[in-house]
Length: 211
Image (tube, rainbow, N blue to C red):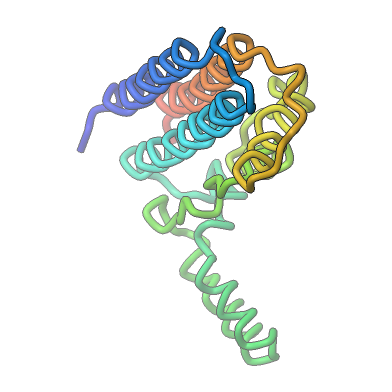
């Protein structure tokens, strides 16, 4: 099994790589001529890719850390049982919530309730091309993370990171008249740091208070 330091280093290394890529994006596109707004739209799409990609990196690394650390979900991560009951919930839906299906679902809880992190499916908290504040908040609720440090950036995340990206990615022309490429890249880099801090703080808390 990897030592805890491995997981901290993985987050740091992933963030460092993405920050270097963001710096290269800034170098290539900031200050140049952009008559048709192509460069600006490219920046928006590439910057969003770093935002979502790093968040998903952290989810994968953190869930691997939890599996490595052991324990039961229900002891400290009750809401993460959402990710341990995916198959059962899908079966319940596929069977139209029939009386028999509901009975079988409740019966399955007997085994699931004491499960470990190896049963958790991280797909329930992965970003899927829409990592806006609402999605981040919902995922943080499952992770039992504090969303408050992102609240000051809520409008900017939703508009400048996500909405502009959606428009640019679908061939529309978002109003980028207020876009400052340097500030936009710096903003995304700062968001990556906030995400990294929260996942690493959560890992540190587990190590400081083992079950």
